[in-house]
Amino acid sequence: MIEFENVSKVYQTPAGEPFPAVKNLSLKIEEGEFATILGPSGCGKSTSLRMIAGFEEPTRGKVLVNGQEVEKPNSNRAVVFQENSALFEWKTIKENVMFGPKACGASNSEAEEIAEKNLELVGLKDFLQQYPAQLSGGMQQRVLIARALANDPDILLMDEPFGALDALTKTLLQEKLLKIWEETGQTVYFITHDVEEAVFLSQSIHVMTAQPGQIKESWQNELPYPRDLDVRKKDEFKKLKDDILKTIHNETVTAAKQKEAEIA
Image 1 (spheres, one colour):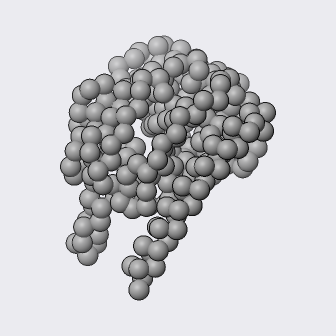
Image 2: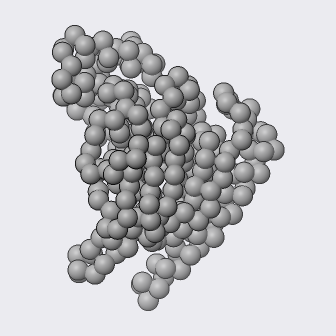
């Protein structure tokens, strides 16, 4: 479904110096897989997601979706960002979710039906006529998920979607997301800094190295679905979490040393 073939991405600093964000990244994500990407800040996690979305082009290598090289954004790849500012404040919740289908040619009645279906899926069927400012942060995040689902994408790209939420709201949305994934069977590419979140949600977990990022280590998560809070108490959960934390700690130390060297 998703494949990085020896991908590198180099930016230019304001001073005109090359800044390698990703280097020789190779990774395969299967159709229907829930994959999570972890790594120290600045390792290129979000850059990798933006290349799948078609927002960025690799400097070298290829990003493939269904065997085709990604050249531009497409409605079969939906993105959910952390920032709720992506919502249209002047539109109702229902109108926000209708926007994508209408932009793709759906009639008003078709778009309404799609919006109502997906808002019910995320538990917001009683808030169709509310505006974003009238909702909590967690509810706004659910609207973003519903809007991403509205075009029935093959791939859901999620860039730290729960990072700004309180612990209780985050846990509830993690459970909601798993139910949606189990129902839709979509491929999910999920970025987070939260190791426990990664272990709770994912089938596969991939840790990137310090900048420039590439895959340091990958794990297959054999914990069965459906998962609830009790799964966090299992020895297998704790061991996988500890193994990933050790790898991330080493890469975070490396990243900190890089920053110190830059300052010096």
